[in-house]
Amino acid sequence: MGAAGETMPLEYTGIRVRDLARSVRFYTEGLGLRVGPAGRMRAGGSWQELIDPVTGAVLELNYYPGEPPYREGDELDHLGFRVQDLDARVARLVALGARVRIPAFDEADGRLAFLSDPDGVWVELYERRSEEVPPTSRPGA
Image: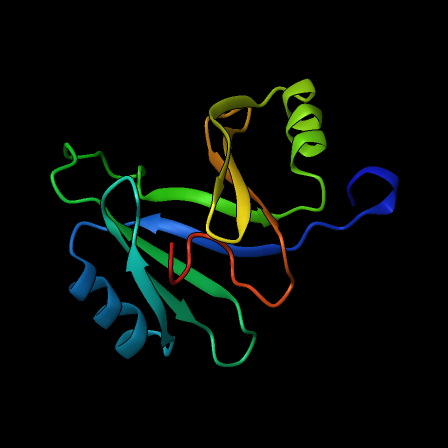
């Protein structure tokens, strides 16, 4: 649990893929995930959500064309957490050893920040302006 008993849902896991179509086929045909929303990132690249029909868990495939090749093991792109107070959560995680990679910024219907945990795993924190609106890494971003 977070500070003062606040829970922070792990909403999805994002992984880097080398071939988006191939990865969609692998996870849908091979593991039974269903195709969800897709879009383009402001910073370049594209993403595709795949949804587990039983649990509702979301796997976000991230494709960055033109990026330099990466080594095996670099596929985990980031973990995405929805938070209530972005600035307070960033401060708390920095105090626990996180490093701010991309400072908080406004986009679409929320605010985002990217940090890395003490081992270097990237973590996206997003604060929604409205519960009815999807995270900013979703359609319309």
